[in-house]
Amino acid sequence: MATPERRFDVWAGASAYERYMGRWSRPVAREFVPWCAAGEGLRWLDVGCGTGVLSQVVAESARPRLVLGADRSETFVAAARAGVHGPVRFAVADATALPVRAGTFDMAVAALVLNFLPDPVAAAAGMTRSVQPGGTVAAYVWDYADGMGFLRLFWDAAVRADPAAHALHEGGRFRACRPEDLRRTWLGAGLADVAVTGIEIPTVFTDFADLWEPFLAGQGPAPAYAASLGPAGRARVRDALAAAAPVRADGTVALTARAWAVRGRRPRGGPAGHGVTSRTGETRAGRETAPVRPPQPHPPGRHP
Image (cartoon, rainbow, N blue to C red; front, top):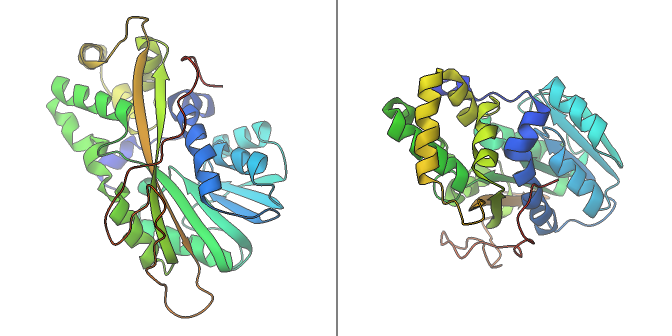
């Protein structure tokens, strides 16, 4: 049964999503796809594909045979069909009831969706069934607890202005987005050779309005919460956020965002293993190392 907090998990407007989250998911996807260590000519399933951010990166960089993106939002799927090019197809489908035959794909991936599903282990198991033995299942989610700077800044400001917002704070709601929880989810889905890594990106806003205005569009938990407030309540949250935002001399607001990525392999036979490779940023025997950090970008500006 849905919790009261889930009424704010609204995802429907493609353009609003792009400004709020898509522009930041894209650089994570560019690090995530190579980390999946996939060969060329493979068949990819993008679960909860949204507007097609990850599907586009796969099409551009992985030389796939085919990418199938699936999302329950007809609006998002329409935007993906219009904006993503290459050997990519999209379908309206629920991530928890994928309309694909077992063993159809080589890779099953998901970007920023696991924590919004009622049963992440069941979703991961469904992704596992969709790949052939030896295939890879991988996903990434934001580090809501410690590493997602602009969301943490917003919710901390919201709680100062409205203590009732504490129950909605994504840092507390999405505790399953921690490395060891992701690892347990993947092992629980029967996957072997499970690895977890951190991907950290800069999130540079051109000014305070570029930080604040996406929270007014109603897409996602924080914007949906802001939309639920009256004008006076929104003004209090805005003022609290403005007081806390680290605005630089040139007016920009420079923050960072970290995602946790997880991958595993569908065993060819027998029980899933627990082996973890020792690449920088991955977990080994339950210990975390420094996250992978891509090079810093050129001077700030709006992302395409």
